[in-house]
Amino acid sequence: MDKASLNSGHRGRLRGRLLAHGLESLQDYEAIELLLTFAIPRRDVKPIAKAMMAKFGSIERILDASPDELISVEGSGPACAALVKLLKELCGKYLEAKLSGRDILLDSPRRVVDFCRMKLTGGKKETLMLIYLNARNYFIDFQCFSGTVDRAAVFVREVAESAIRLHATGVIAAHNHPSNVCDPSQEDMTLTTALQRALDAVGIKLHDHLVVTREAAYSIFHRRYL
Image (cartoon, rainbow, N blue to C red; front, side, top):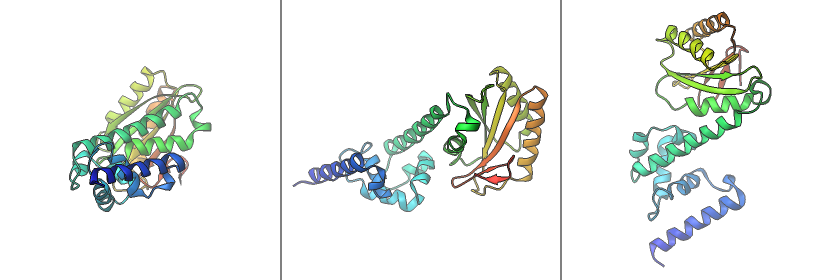
């Protein structure tokens, strides 16, 4: 049996296990291996999957990696990087859709955290995200700004303007810590106060400000990890 046939049989077995028993039936490197088969159809991708796991340490960190970081793995290339980026973006879209049509504060607090982590973690800079809510606390839209601390005054004005334009009655703020340390800084507390005052002035409620990392999220309003 030639190498191509062996690869095809192995890939078929991985697909069969996934379809029959779910992701739990695959080791992490096998899940990445199966994913990469769609970018590299006629080559053994197990060494590339194992190299990615060795370099990044987990599936989550692979999804958070930049295209340049993914391409730097031996055997990888633009097709692999594009597929991984597409997967992460699709996960974000899925979580965004899960927020729609329900009371976020009552029904979906865990989904809010998952959505924020999916959208914000992996970046090299701090990014502020605002989730805008209507009077029923339903998701309207979200918006991201880069560089929260240095441009706090600009953010405060832009957030208030965006909330008014979207006819929002509530906002949830979130930002990432690239250091992976989830505890809020004094600058985070200052920004929270500035956001709350600006939104209060136009009759819009700031429901919370979350600090998110790959492993955790912290609620500044509730002073606890989520």
